[in-house]
Amino acid sequence: MHIQEIDRFIGSLKHYRLTKQQIKTLRGQALAGDLAGAQKGLMKVVSKNASN
Image (tube, rainbow, N blue to C red; front, side, top):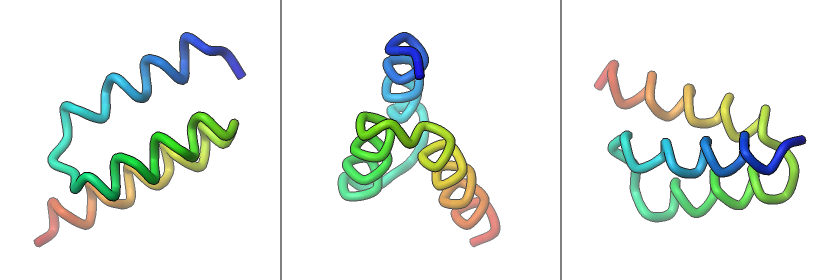
């Protein structure tokens, strides 16, 4: 787990249309060390929003 990867992920969240709660959840996951889970969750939310 690299701090730069986490910072890059958190910075990229602002480029997506997410609710404040979704951002807090994904950010918390990444900071807790589950970067892979946060990235998977982001892709799930983004694909769900794209289909609607």
